[in-house]
Structure formats: structure tokens, C-alpha cells
Amino acid sequence: MLTIAVSKGRIYEEALPFLENAGISPVDDPKKSRKLILATTREDVQLVIIRATDVPTFVEYGAADMGIAGKDVLLEHGAESLYEPLDLGIATCRLMTAAHKDEPLPKRRIRVATKYVKTAQRYFAEQGIQAEIIKLYGSMELAPLVGLADCIVDLVDTGNTLRANNLEPRELIMNISSRLVVNKAAMKIKHQAICELLQQFEQTLTRRRAAS
Ligand code: ATP
Ligand code: PRP
Image (tube, rainbow, N blue to C red; front, side, top):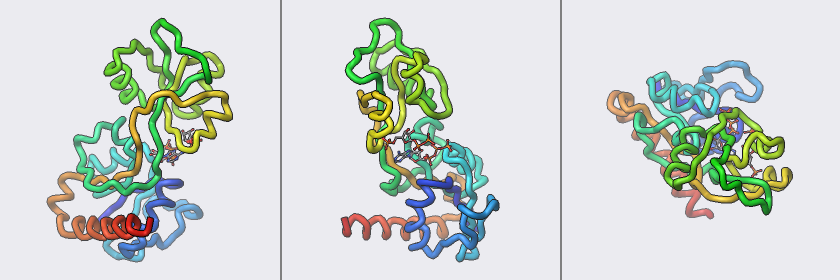
């Protein structure tokens, strides 16, 4: 049995064509079902539906053989413990700093609100900027508006959320897309099954690139 960890929502929706082309369709719709382990149309494959940020943990410990996770989440988790063989090019966005529109950052040590604490710490240290990082779990854009932080580190796609809150994107930290990750032991023990699936995902990717 191969267990694949996927998060509900955006990544699941965008990963579906890759899974379907490999003959993997969940028997129950994760949007309607309360089941956390979903059987699929392939007897040898099951999906576990978890929070996006938990995907690397499940795969690292071998609770799932493979998973699909955003590069933002992998960076923050520290992905050395996982293989990351394929960039699926889905759920693309940018990890950026953002701040009040047209306002320079203060000269003192800045306060930065983010859920990407380690990534932000690393980024500001590399830039030689003194920053105090404040951990939030969501609605980062609110922090500068209420004086909690001078700037934020968050994902930007259309920029609508920043614009709606009178903020502007500043520095690009990294372009983000979702990656296929594989448990290192599973790669040895279930080598053939995993490589077959990898090939099928790669074929989908090649076809998509040719079509675009
Ligand atoms: P969690 O439930 O663990 O807090 P989440 O609410 O951030 O995670 P999603 O919003 O589904 O979960 O995001 C999952 C992934 O999709 C992110 O890690 C990122 O890689 C990507 N992503 C997030 N927001 C966007 C966006 N606006 N546009 C494109 N991709 C995005
Ligand atoms: C993400 C991210 C930003 C927003 C950016 O939030 O945290 O708030 O998307 O996208 P935009 O540039 O297109 O506006 P999401 O919509 O996933 O909500 P969340 O707060 O549940 O993570």
C-alpha cells in the first residue's frame, strides 16, 4: 500500500489531475466526507487528508510514503529529511515581505509578523537587517494595520489581499510552487511503486507544459 498525504483545498484541487492521470481517484469526495483516510480507485493507493503544514511531518516519519506540499511549508519545516523529486508547478505564488503602502520602514529594529518564523529569521539575517519575528497563524495582513508589526512575510498571488488592506509587496523571498515529497526509507522499500508513480506525474507535467 502506498499512502499519499495531501491537504484539502487549493493543493488538493490542483493535484487532482496528477492523481487522476495515475489512475488515483478518491472513492469519497474529501469535501463531503469526514473520513481522514480515503480509499482510491487504485487498491494499492490511499490518501490521507491533513493540514498543509503537517504534510512534511507525516512524510518525514513515514506515516505517509509521499506527499504534496508547498515549497513555503517545506522551507519552514526544513526539508533535508525528505526527498523532493518533483516540482508539480501547482499552487504557485510568491513568498514576500509586505508593508504599508508608500511608508518607509523605521530605522530601528523592525517587527515582522509571519507564520514562517524560521524562514523570516533566515531571510532578515542574510540581509543584515535586525528583526524581531512575531509568530501568527493567519491574517498576517492585519498586523501592520493594528500596529502589531512594521511588516509581514506572507504569500502573495494576485496581490488583492495586500491592496485591499492598503499594503504593498516589497521584497521577493522566493517563488513558491507545490512539490512532491517522498519518505527516504519508503523510496528504498517501495522503490518500484514510487518510481512508477513519479513517472506518471512527470508525464502529466510534460503534457501540461506542452499544452501551455
Ligand atoms: P494550513 O491549513 O496548514 O494553515 P493553509 O491554510 O495555508 O494551511 P492553503 O491556503 O490551502 O493552506 O495553502 C496551501 C498551500 O498553497 C500553501 O502552503 C502555498 O504553498 C499555496 N498557497 C497558499 N496561498 C496561495 C495563494 N493565494 N495562491 C496560490 N497558492 C497559494
Ligand atoms: C493566502 C495568503 C494571502 C493570500 C494571498 O491566504 O496567506 O493572505 O492568499 O493571495 P492574493 O495575493 O491572491 O490575495 P489564503 O487565501 O490561503 O487564506 P488563509 O488566510 O486561510 O491562508
